[in-house]
Length: 196
Image 1 (cartoon, rainbow, N blue to C red):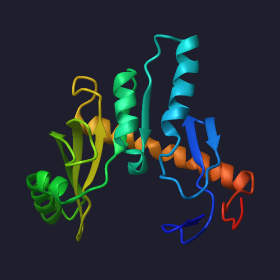
Image 2 (image 1 turned 180 degrees about the vertical axis):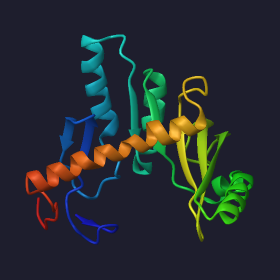
Image 3 (image 1 turned 90 degrees about the vertical axis):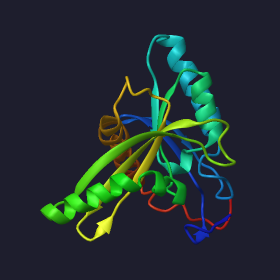
């Protein structure tokens, strides 16, 4: 199917990794949401882990393409932690206004990137079933604002805002290396295709 973001006919694969270990590689048509099939795969994978190691604490992390109420609600119901990217919007940016101003002033004073964090409760107007914990990263780079947001069900006792963002969420970038290895090592650099 044609995918508007990629501007071509392609597949939209779903990958789930634990560190360097591939747990799921699902080839999907591109007419699906980026998160399509995630709950099914989480049920399968978490079920297998808990059958063998019932006391293991499980935390998932993903980018904003997976910040869907169905995934978060499933995790909340099944005692699975999550840290998911959250696409910014005007309401979120307003909530981070004071911190962005403080970061801007610090950046202008030092000429260096400056960041601070805000931990707050938030609920979307329509798509979320409940209020959730959101971490806002107020970052200002020389000449450029760089606000970012994540949503989590981990408590402040489990991880403060800065640790949650910098250490838990940003480690998600390592998973991108696994995808690159798959694409380059298996010559799967393109999933473009006009037919199934």
